[in-house]
Length: 287
Image (cartoon, rainbow, N blue to C red; front, side, top):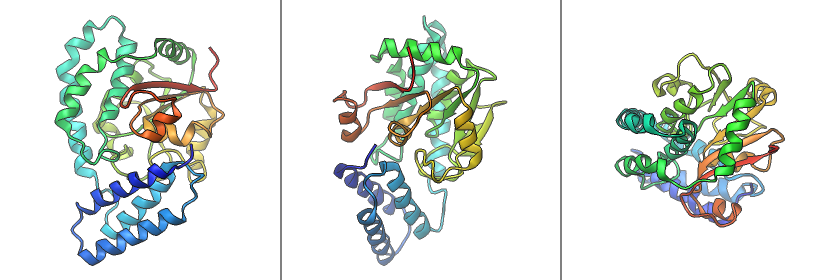
């Protein structure tokens, strides 16, 4: 998926949001902003937005002198998600279709995103996640996802954000022995790395990382271990908008994308869906 003009505003919103949190001199902030603007100006807009976002965050991290700048937000998101999950377990036990409920919660967890939404509030996210089980969804796509996950012998599950990952434990837990988790190779925004896997509630699951710090998938920058796992998997499950943006036009593997449509560029790509709607999309998958 190509970068479009509206993406520039998103890059800049993220830049100023992050600069506002850094204890830098005005001169240092100005220099950082100038370098980010230069990177954006020189960027190849044929690339997906997350690949340019990775460059933006590389500049900001260098200026801050700290790679894991969202560590506290990640810890808070994970704690909040665990508390919320425990509070709704009685409702989950009553769900007539546990698979569908777990898929919807895995998508609902995508609400927890300090990277995309500069005004994100965990309190508001609680209410939205609680109502996830009543959200409309594509029932045919849900049934196809169920069928393909049941049939697959090896599933590569591409993780997204912390907090959200807590809800992913439910869906992946239905397929013991089939799942390999793929996380970011290095800290990038509030995305999951190896450091947050156990705290998210995963135990006894194979974990690999991309070897990269892109908030999506960059095949050019990915490790050979990740590429081998990607090629070997019967099915790819990709969480979040960043994974969708980087893979929807650039994968030959059977893949499902589970995410919420958050921005105008993606909404247009999906044919004008409702903002915030729950999406179950697939490519290279036969019914």
